[in-house]
Image (cartoon, rainbow over all chains, first blue to last red; front, side, top):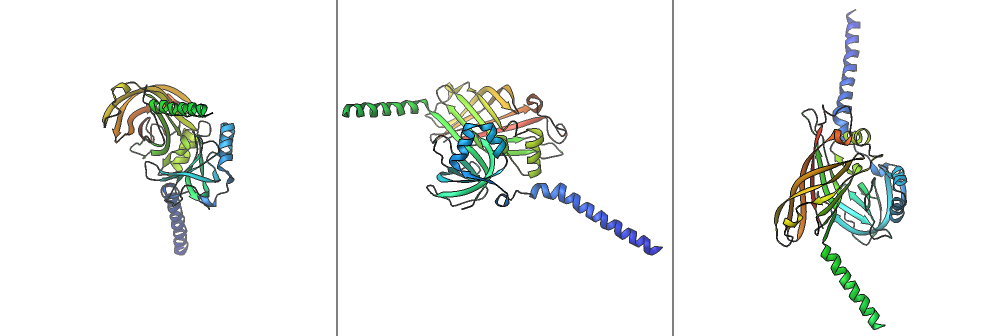
Length: 139
Length: 181
């Protein structure tokens, strides 16, 4: 009789422990530590010029294709700047000098203007440039 | 032939001069933050890809921002913000189009901090509303920056959700900080 009570208590405390750690993980830990692993995500690959053209021709359709999705972009670096938070922004040129691809990097990078690169980022949409965030260097 | 070339180069020089005289200030890397925290939850986010243009001549000013570009410390909150509250696939942008009404009081050739007032149309979540705001324009070494803090009511922009009023404040404080190129 005593043994069964002990067994029940043991099982009960294990269940409690799993529940508590589950709650802690999903409510407190994961929301603040979860990050999209952009390099591992499936993405749509295209050139900077193609991406800009897509948006210029049909913004609504392009949003449905690219918005909040990982996009891999090939292009020539026309400018490298820092935003007001000190993060690096890489601009990839298109045939239209008024409209480029702007990619805000997560971490510092030593990409220099004039080089051909492949970048990956999450598409946030189109203002006068197509904007990618959380950018990473691919090649 | 020489004359034609000279005429066109003169035209080009005059053309560029007149563009400069317009004094259009612009940036692609302005910053907008918002703060909707309550004692229950810290709700704040920042966007560093704000596009803004400002004309010195008449004080005309525009800001545009992508909703997906707002960064939260809490990634789950960022997803909820986009999906449930701002519906960013349906309304990917927010913008402001208006005027700095007292632009004449700013001396662009002298460094300093000038108080400014602005009015115009603010569009968020597909709803446009007239707003008035105050702020300051700073000139330092020929560089222009604009700062403004104002409050908006979420219900004015038809932003709804179960946590508004409990975990999320009904009134959101917006901070604009744009340094022009």
